[in-house]
Structures are given as structure tokens and as C-alpha cells.
Amino acid sequence: MNYFTLALVATVPAYYIPFENDFKDICQHRWLDRAAQIKCESNFDPNIKSFDNGEGLGQATNIWPWYIKMGWVPADSNPYQVRPAIQGAHKYMVWLEARVKNHYWLTACGAYNAGLGSIQKAQKLADIADLPGDEAWLTTLPQVTKANSRYTINYIKHLKQVRSIYRKHYES
Image (cartoon, rainbow, N blue to C red):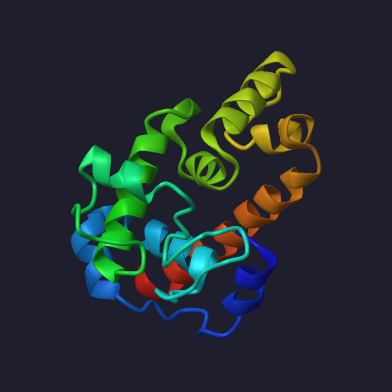
């Protein structure tokens, strides 16, 4: 998440999810989680390009060729196409969730934002310090990513808020 993306997040109504059918079709029972993440990444703008080279809905930064190599998106796709962008972000999140402690969604989101290696290091430090809870890594992340940790910490806070709004609106 970057400042440009943060500024855009407020422009779409809090409960509105564009491409809802695509999220439901691709992400199935995880559709609200993935929609909250895409809201925080791009505010659902498939044409956005951020200052740090994030592209499209999922803000794929130099990772799109890997998505293609993994078979997660069609070889002729790009991050500005809605369905492939949702599909790539979803498959990447499934991959990350399998690699973080307790397979916790918000920890995988932290890895999506700060990098898997950084989150795994923060998780190890949290374990060494005997810090409780699935989000203890947020406490130790500044030791790993220094000043950049504030972006990931704020990203996680915002994801929780957006997901809560979506759950209240769509699951009630």
C-alpha cells in the first residue's frame, strides 16, 4: 500500500464491491477477504499504476511473470485485466497463507505487502520473545523492516476495518 493508493481508498462507498461476481466465482468462500484486500491495494481501479510500480487491481509489482509461470493466470494476460488480476492475487494469497505461521489471513496479507521473508523473520522474533497471538509479528516487524514497517502495520489495520465493513454488509 502506498500514499497514492491510501488517498484513493476513500472515494468508493465503504460497502461497495465492484466485480463482486468475479470475486465470488474466483475466490469462493474467501471472496470478502480478497475484495477487502483489493480495495486496500487499488480501490478497485484496474488501470492504476503506483509510484512503486504496482499495477492493476492487485498492485502486482514485478511478480506478474511469476504468476504466469506458476500457471495462476493465462500467459497472454496482464495485471490490468480484472479477472486475471483477481485470480493472480487470490492464488498468490493461497500460496502465502500456506507459508505463514497458522496460515493466518492477515499474516499472509502482511507478506503480500512487506514480503514473505520479512514476515517470517518477524514471526520468528515474536516466537523468541514469546509474544502471544496470531498478530504478534506486527510488534516485531519494525526490527525487520525498520521504518517501512509502518506501511505494513497501517495496511493491516486498514484491511481489518474494510473487512469488518464488508462482513457487516454482506454477511448480515
